[in-house]
Amino acid sequence: MQVMPIRILLVLLSLIILCPSSASADAERRTALVIGNSTYSTGPLKNPANDATDMAATLKKAGFSVTLKKNANHREMIESIEECGNTLKRGGVGLFYYAGHGVQVGGINYLLPVGSRINREGDVRYEAVDAGRVLTEMETANNGLNIVILDACRDNPFGKSVRSTSRGLAIVTHAPTGTFISYSTGAGQVDRDGTGRNSPYTKALLENIVKPGLTINKVFMNARSKLKKETGQVPWELSSLVGDFFFVPGKGAVATVEDESPVSTSTATTAMDDEEQKLEAERQRLEQEKADLARQKVLADKRRQLEEEKERLEAEKKARRQAEIERKQAKKKKGRYDVAMGTRPSVSKGNEIKRDGRFIAYDNGTVLDTKTNLMWAAKDNGSDINWQNAKSYCESYRGGGYTDWRMPTQDELAALYDGGKSYRATQRAYYVHLTDLIQLSACCPWALETRGSEAANLYFDIGFRLWDPQSGGSYFRALPVRSDK
Image (cartoon, rainbow, N blue to C red; front, side):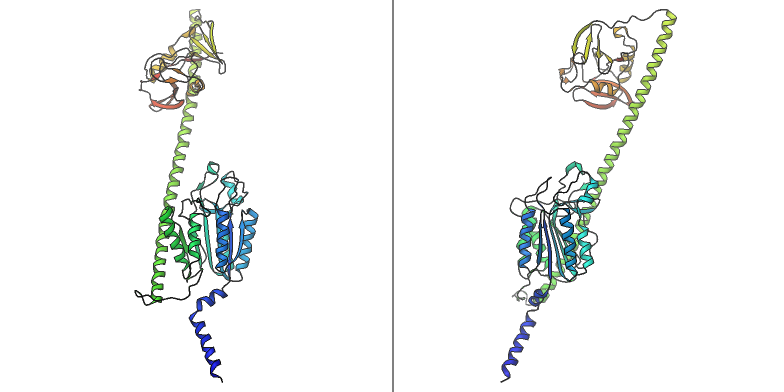
């Protein structure tokens, strides 16, 4: 009479021994926070809300207790992350999934809430959520195993207003033991939002999470292989796990003809997974170094441009001071000459013959700019000339009987340029842009400023301030100017 109970007990014990993974999966607490932000005022995204909805549904089927937040603002994101951390203190597996915009500033990754107001780099720290906050909550919870999935490497949505952001997200250099972090693409790279319901990365994950018997490494390896083949995008992971994790445990290993030892096959696969993770981490480290070097090069170029601009400004100031000194010396010299000779040079402003806006042309070959009170020669010297000869030409020019003609500065020439006006240069087959009361025979009058062996000028065909060798003669002209006071 007692044989049957003993047999039943043996059967139950056998079932427990043969199916340990199912028993542990049922008892294991699984907690997930899923956030998807789409409705940004700047750079709205199509898929993140859909991605979060579908990921939440898939994780529920895998036994997770899921908190879903769609289009969350800053406060909602902070509070939900803190609540998730408090829940994880009770133990079990934790998972954080985020889809939406993410930016990297100063090597720190930030997740962008909906409604964030970011106009400059300094705003990011206060308007966005530091992704490291998630890892801190998980480390404080000390729950043993945590998974972080970031489908957030989409490009900086703020354009030039936030200049110091880098493309994509940075490599995380510290995470608590027992953490698995997955990025939708490599460091310094940008993600695709996708044209269907889901982003390509999330779509690949959803397909593999539900497959029974796959370790977490295999799930993400399969997703990476699919994504690289279909789009060229290469996700990467950082792992400090010390054991296997299954989203959906298998029904039990089944031996095949090729390999009759399931345990050995699992061990070999795990070893290869670990090796691939190491190689991928090394590749990502090199990519980050490459991105840092590129950024250093950009900063060096900016620094060089600033130095050149400072030199240009100093040269202009020096030229102006020199022009003022020469003007005073010429005036003093002219005064002594007038006293000695008892005469004054014959000066005639002439009769007005034509107007063009602020410019007045006189019959003595001069043109007055009423805005700047500068009087210009009505035409240049008419032939190719080097800088030194052009300077001499301007200083010896006597148009209208005036003796205080000089070479103009680059700023004075720039004030003549007018993109709305155009006429063909009298000796060259291109058009210059200034009032036609001042006739240029070529594009480029010399300016007073010098820098070593170069001198400034202005290209009236394109409006550029440039520097050329003082010895150069082709296309360059002398255009005298004087102050009419």
